[in-house]
Length: 133
Image (cartoon, rainbow, N blue to C red; front, side, top):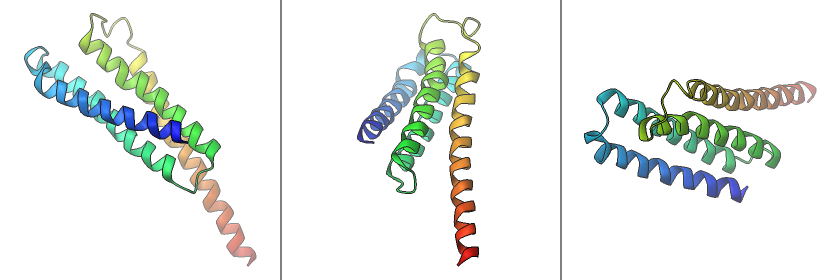
């Protein structure tokens, strides 16, 4: 669990650094569309960092569930935001890795679905317990 929190905090710090880098250094280099794309990568990274902080501090998740959710989101951030950064900061073209960004988005969605399933099971189990009492 602490490993997940350390990775999460590192990703949060990187989102701040990359956001500042984009706002200051890249505005002279990237087009408005490219800068907007870069900012989307930073924004989605930070959204999922916040979710990961919740996941890894929420006592309703087991350690196994926290690890699974964290790994799904870590991988999703890497694919989604990482591919956006690579396209905008390197000579890699969107054409050459067109599938990576949507695959990252799908991975992030899978993380959310996994959490929904966990919460539905908890709700279902709690409803059954209250009926029996």
